[in-house]
Amino acid sequence: MENVYYMRIFTALLILTLLGTYAFSGEKAPEVTLRYSKQADTIRLVLESDDETIGRAIAYATPQGIKVNFRSDFQIKRPPDFPFETTKNVRSLFIKLRDVATIKTSRLSAPARMVFDIATTAATPKEPLPPSGPVVSPGPQRPPAPQPLPTQPPQKAPQRPPLQPMPKVPLPPPPADKLHLIKTVVVDPGHGGYEYGIVAGGAREKDANLALSKDLGAAFAKKGKSVFLTRRTDQSISLDERIAFANAKSPDLFVSIHAGLSPGFVIYLASPEDQNADAVVKLYARTYRQSRYIGRSRAAASAVGLEIKNGLQAEVVLRELPLPVLNSLNAPAILIEYPSLSTYASDKKMREKLATSIMKGIAIYEQQ
View 1 (cartoon, rainbow, N blue to C red):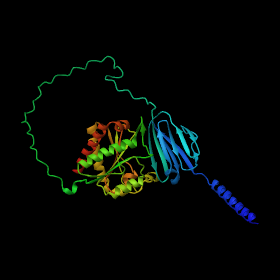
View 2 (view 1 turned 90 degrees about the vertical axis):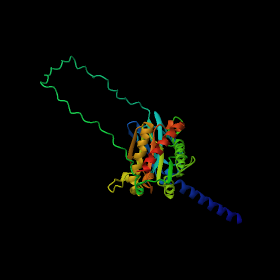
View 3 (view 1 turned 120 degrees about the vertical axis):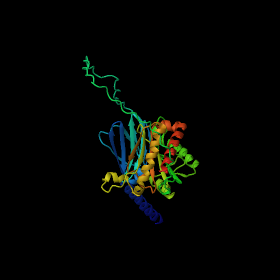
View 4 (view 1 turned 30 degrees about the horizontal axis):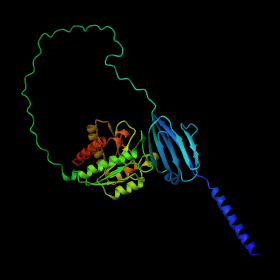
């Protein structure tokens, strides 16, 4: 009798276990949508899914391919004309790349997306430089018709005494309320941890960003500024954590450091709040805390950009974009995007030269 009792309990437990397994196996795996767009020599790949799936995914990007590890099984949905070969395992997706020069990774929210900006190495025909002479021979030229000589010689203008240089008068110092005095600075090295950023020739953007940010932080410290870095090691920090950390320090200036795919420097500042902005633009702008600092951010970006242009003899472009890391700052904020990752990753002198130009620009900004 007792054996029958235990046998019934065992059978009941077995049935419950089987039912639980069936219910668990019946859960639908999350769907991951893979999209792409192409513009000139840049291809953008986008992986979109729910916040949990994208937020806990880990991506590894190299010029040979992209590997994304998810925490559970998933379903992949991709367009039929997707340009790269893909392989899916139980929890991993591998995208085989070709003709790739650099890759930049980023994450976006609302909806959750993982973005890969790929610069291809496909050679584009360059326009030839204009020749020094005419392109088409104009043929034999007729001599110009002789002009009649004037009957009277031209009158000479009366001689004026040479101008005397104005004496230099020292300008009075600007009013104290117009000085953009900086006491506290937050420097933000972009990416980190499993977010490599751009990868080119063995150089990783996250490492170059950190090295350049440390050089810049040391330069600020020598000027007597209080300096805080959002990260001092190779660690992954979310966008919300960067924003919260920076705002908690109440800085007088926020500087974010990134590498870019442009041939020159690009300095970003937040765009003013636009109530008529479409939904796509508003996806990037979490808050508009930056609106009261737009003028000072623009002044800082202009001063720094001019010194980089003069100091490094490089092209510098200023752009307004509703980036969350800028829009959400309660302080003047700029994002500096430098070109040539391999140069700034391996050449310490170039990093110091860039840091010096940035410091000169900020010194000018403080006196405006």
